[in-house]
Length: 161
Image 1 (tube, rainbow, N blue to C red):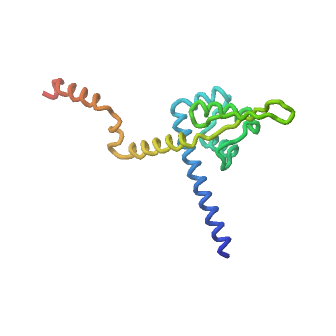
Image 2: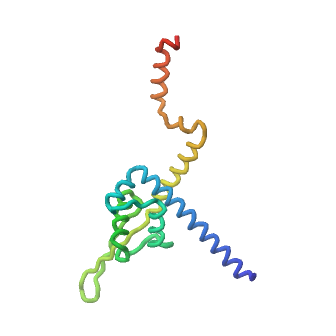
Image 3: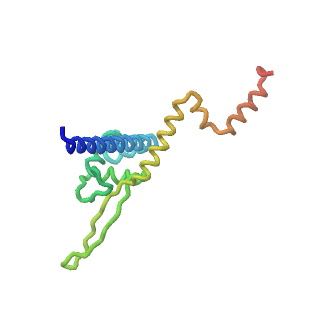
């Protein structure tokens, strides 16, 4: 194997690895949003349930390795999905207005991946899953107020006297 083909294979593996990581992060974020009610919205608005893997595949098919894609390439169902993902902060939209040589105004609409939000939610979800996997992790989310109330109740019970 020549050094140029070896280096191109390493570059391809690196790209594939980054793509895989991005897909996993996006899938984790969408699953988290589904827990918050996105799932019901997708059933109601699209007439069928999309699973996180399906949504990730649609996003990667439409966006590829770009952060921005043009709206007029989308199907009606993809556009409905993108509006819902925009409601959840995972996508944003923008409009570019330009004047064509004939003098008419031309609007071009774009969809943009909100990579900061996706990374933020993915990190939070990953940290939460990591914390929940430890034996005492489930107790860390219980507020001190609840612990104090429970200990006061415990002192007043006849069986504790």
